[in-house]
Image (cartoon, rainbow, N blue to C red; front, side, top):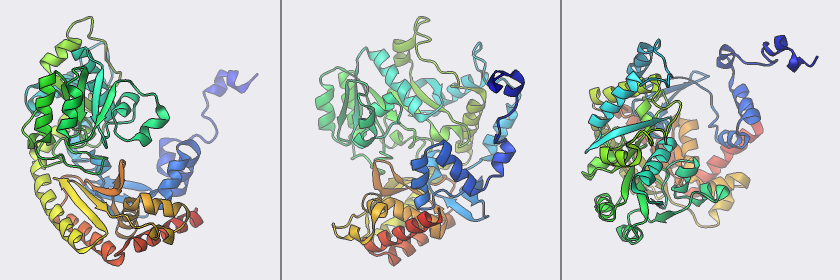
Length: 473
């Protein structure tokens, strides 16, 4: 009898099976090998080039410890998902409080999900009222795009060059970088890009009155921390209203205090028709995404029993995720995190501007609150040849990764570059970051820029780290 046909054999764990306890006891080499063998081998190799494949075993707030006991400061913040920091005790306590409740029970109305939806209606600006819960930012965007089409009866969608809204097919169709789109073409039809910041271009497209929605980030995150021109968002609001196009704000990265206000759109005093949230909504612990819209828009799209099941999800609004979100929102209020982000952001930006004045390597410094980007100048053609092979390509196209590598390996500060502009490193620490920790970052950057005053020094240093990694591995 074949072993697979024997029910007793089927009940046994396969040879090499790893229990949770076994997984926790793995060393760094075992973790890397699992990723190279069973996950994304190319990504594992890329991460390893600059020692971004370290094994982290403990985290609290902004602090993270590796398997060797070394302490790091997390200035990446999971791309804005850690506004509250790692393992916030209030969020963990909320999960403990609901541990005996049913987490998934579709033949019911979720107790905690309903309370979270009410809180979001009170929490968000304007007359935003009705929420839909999913599991990620991309899923929130997918739902928002579908809602706009259902509510307006139109097909067209407008988005910005340099934008990033996710990598599922619908979200990718309104993400403004061809690198991520072209392999998956054709994407969904009737999606039109416009330059970020150009009201003239937006007006020219929307006057056709065939577009369901314009989706925009109040600050472009993956585009390189790009702030909109003065009056752009309020102008977009007026244009959308004039042409019957719904305005979607993607506040997945900018929301929940990150920019110094609860939501970035509040800097301009405007409210979208639909707002997308995720990342820090789950308190940095549970995955949850949401869109929230007006009663009017919701009813046009799904306001009957015939339409009530047109857009659903299995895990959306589950008890644990909703409880974590309620606790996260409470912590944001109690700790006054938007104000902390504003004050700390002003201090950080002032320090970075001083570095920009001293070091030509720094092309620009920009941001709002604790959503900050540092862009680096690119060299002339010959400088890149100072390095070699893959290191040369990374040096030319991903200078931000070299700076991030120096910060990680020499100063134990975690950062990363932005996806749509790899020459920008992002700084998005937990909003409770201390002044002392900000000074630690600024001092590290000062040392890096002063010891690598030009591109060649930075590229050569990065090449050495890559070569050591390749030899070791």
